[in-house]
Length: 307
Length: 254
Image (cartoon, rainbow over all chains, first blue to last red; front, side, top):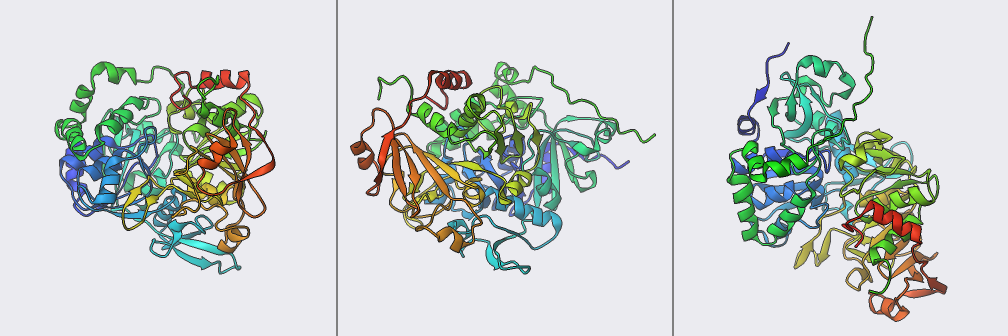
């Protein structure tokens, strides 16, 4: 059996996320967003990062507001239930806190780019975005014609993140992990990434993971580090563990209207806490408990027995 | 409009839901369409199938209000939870009948801009971007735009085409290499617009309590009206009851 890959969040970010890295995160879209990892990146003051993701529900906005970001490769950056991301706007429109490069994609082209990265090919063709200004010359795409016919196609270049960060329900120390619910581009990004950090609600025995190999998101040998961080996806949801804290997104929206407001928010919720445990203390036990899943809807067991 | 027994958003949800035929495969998207899909399933389209780009497929509506497509109630009881590429692949193959798009700006040809308002390169406003909207506009058999009605949102020409509509008129989509589709309706807070053979939007019906002059004054181009332009049917009592059961606090619809 492989040796333990378990690290604290501080160690994992310190060792495996460097200045100038490209980082894929928020890959299941609105659920399973690795906020605790993002906040540790902010606390360790990483700079010149390239963020990769389909949509980002406020985490990219926070990293941009904290001055960690040089470039974004994404389809949508904002606040899904409350509206725009003010930090994203400030950075894009007026270079506050620093100018950022925006590489516009659609969700599908992010998915195809990461899939090309996962498959080890330089690009994948698609029919999407033909006629969209996203596909104009100044973007990352090229137009082409099918070598097997005369259909017009768009070629999406491979995206290979330096680090892919995934939040999952459970993982074992050797890097095995189970995730369930909508997965977005999680598996593609985990296969494309040069390094993979798995953040888990629970650490379980390896036998729990191997009891259901169809639910494994990424082969354990590709996982670089495993971090045990209960509540690490809040305010996003983790199926079977806790619901989405809708109010938190509204409060963030209101609090970050100005650059000073955003700094105060980061001081309180990120720099002001040493890690996720303290973040949840600050959130308050009652509020945290109110988000907990109380029901029980287990999947029916399946029989994997070979004999 | 304050004496009406429903909100503009509720009327938009109802109009949106009526676009869904029974058995349609619908790419749902975010915000009001989340409720329009649930309403259609309960009213007239029990066999409709909903696609969500995070990788959820449902043939029954979620049991409670969705703030986002990734909320746990949208996962429990789903027909399938999968990857984005699974649903996007079926969209690309032409297996999606209808998709919804919200818009910051939509123009007379149904092109939608959710990327940059104002002037790119000078003073501009950075909007969140495409998400899956540009994919729906490119690849669904038809798409419906849902947008507030004012002259900043319904503009003569968008400065940036995030989600391609009919470009500059009939035949444009084919010339771009788009395989199919295009805009079929714009549902606003004032009216329902449909598209003519020339690829341009025209007003097909005006919502109760709104005048043709209101629509003209709030549209950024000299908009045409259908000869038989009617009043948009009001929501039925049962439709309002279902919407308010789904969204009891009015988070999306009040």
